[in-house]
Length: 267
Ligand code: DGL
Image 1: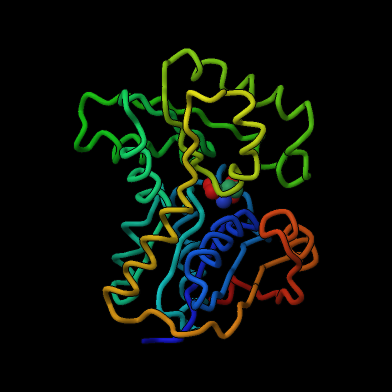
Image 2 (image 1 turned 90 degrees about the horizontal axis):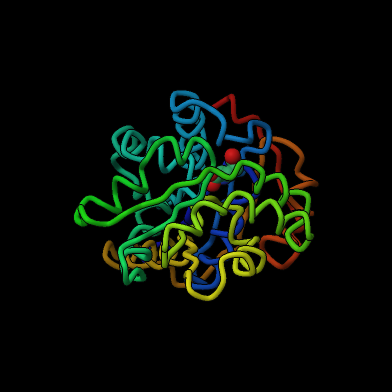
């Protein structure tokens, strides 16, 4: 038993979709969340820059005495999770991409899977590599959807224009006979209803956060470090704490009272 917190981080507010799942599934755990709101987006940045940012954030989280870390950001996962595990071998580092792959592989019936994410996530080809590692005959169709993040951040998830943008991005994917679509970006679960409207009932949408929370729970049990009760959650950002509070209503479904701003460049 270990009541120290689990650290969760993202390039910004989107990782709250992962926080939501962890709160739901692992309700004895305390969470320390960091959103890099000063340096978001990561999705357009290079691997080197994203890796450097993630190392600073993990140093900050370790200083808060976290017992394990979930990298909520798909862009970080896709570009450098292995490097981060090598740099920090003593802490459990879970991601969202591996859990997303696991979910998609058990969901697909026809072995035709779509992946949507930021430009950096799609360019990394990480989802395709993992999905086809043991299934050489599976077909993976990728599409970067850079406009989805700003649409969500502006709270436009139910607007007609968002449906039109989704239709445009998914036009080609819809012709590929996929039966499973991985939402490979923190923000996309917020678009679930709109995406469903565009892709219809024959394509299952995969939110990797579900399995990420589940597999973190299993790791904690395995290592005998699951918490007995939650000591509460703390939220940190590198800029605009008020914006995080506003966004929390949409991503978490309730208000966060305190968000602390820190200078992540110091770590
Ligand atoms: N959090 C990022 C991801 O999941 C999306 C936002 C960004 O580009 O930083 O890939």
